[in-house]
Length: 148
Image (cartoon, helix red, strand yellow):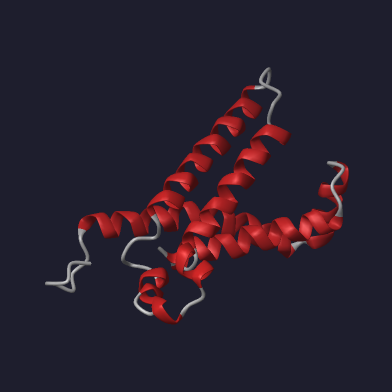
């Protein structure tokens, strides 16, 4: 935000909107997976994935999704979700003979791209990260680096 005014700039509002929109898919999917854990574990088992991987996926989607939505440790959350989307595309959506699989592959790549842009740009001024940056002199150096 501009120091001369408490009104957010259009770029700040657009960055907030982008963070919220990017977070929705992960928050929704994390909640769906968590709401029927038996079905989730069965689905993961059919894919050859263990229960700890299922729980880690739920935790990642909810935790990093909230990170983006609130603007708290945004760069870290965005990086984790970007890598998650790349892994998902490359491991589960490579049957390009199927138009649906190709669409999911491209969607995952596009979301990963958005996450990497957010990793580079940070959360913007309408975020918890910005509030915390004001107090960086009392923070551990690794946390200071994540917030900058």
